[in-house]
Image (cartoon, rainbow over all chains, first blue to last red; front, side, top):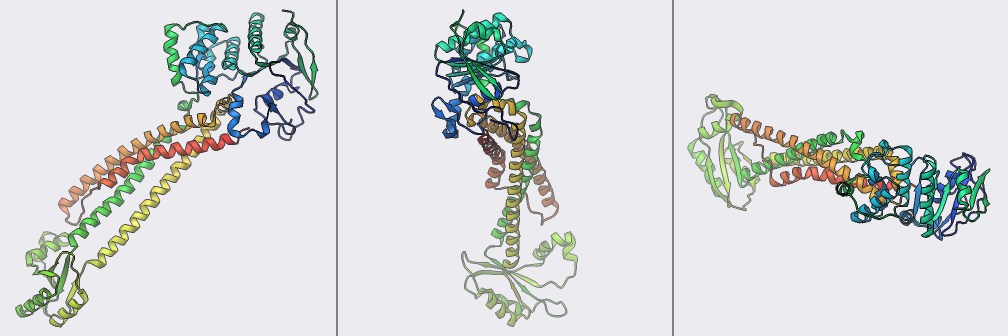
Length: 217
Length: 311
């Protein structure tokens, strides 16, 4: 995988994420974590090689079916990518609205989820009025609101304190227990160590698998 | 995940969710002047359409007034004296003998003066001019005559007699009207093209300005139509808004033209009145909606084409 005529960022990549798996993704800054995630959430096409998602070769999927595939993927972006003109409520509601869900269903799910991430008092707040940690929780709530089959998170705990980070990781675990495949890119070795899930480590454009261990709790 | 109810205040706010605009196109400064551009285009298009219809109506009225009539010109003898009564009677008899002609009435001095009034004013009858004797011929409904044969026959009786069927100058007027109609269609087409290009430009600008939001929606799995709809209805609203402004301006202009024509008709007999047929009103009143729909389709196609190029 390369951008334009730049150097190959990822190569010789052979990665198989089993349904229901939970992986941490780690590596030095600029190693290609975000690029790998971009390939997985279909923001990029590989310059060579193939990507299979939900047992489908992405290169063979007709354009009109791609939105349906994307709706099965939840993404927590490193820079959150919240919409400043919308409230916290409307930001979290976005994936459901895009999927054409009924407004009463949206309302019920969104408010419940905001309460769960501890932002029930900020439903009407615009993102610009919230702290980095609060914005991050909204970004996470938005990513999981549709209970996606695949959840990709780029440094989802980078702006929150340890207690919130643990709580968010527990949320990801709960989703994972319900069948969602989870990939979390993080530099937080303590978190990786604590949860003990398998790790994909990117180094020199290659991905190295590091087995996990039983979770310490 | 936790499950519980929503506070009433939150519920009220949540009701607003359905109305939340994902793309903040209404905050977009790049489209601020679009309604005014469209207003100007609709104003010009309405004037062009109005002018074409008004000319067509005036020609129809002239045509209706002249249909079934001919004018015969009988030159006076050299020296300017009146035609000999016998010659005049012979000429009139020759005219009335033609099948299809139901009446042949010479115009008296007052009628001739009335014809000259638009050019020469109220003193027309005082002016000494070598005018021919004019005879007004009326044809039976649907009848047609051989005007050349009649002219030849009259020429024997009154040398230099002419039969004026009004066809030649009416043909020229209708040719002019056709050219005006073609010109109007071209102007409307040109205005429509400019409007479409403007909408394409502003939609592309909007796509660039809102690229982060469009990209996010795309990655969330928003169908291309979901994104395109927001642009298309925004363009529709702007188009209709601009169209209504242009229409109001055009109606004011029509009102001014109508008053000017009324005033002109009171002082100058040749000035045609400004009247628009129902077809013109329908065309002009439909312009804002047409502009809105053109904007809608243009924005939709522009956005769908742009989104099709995304990964």
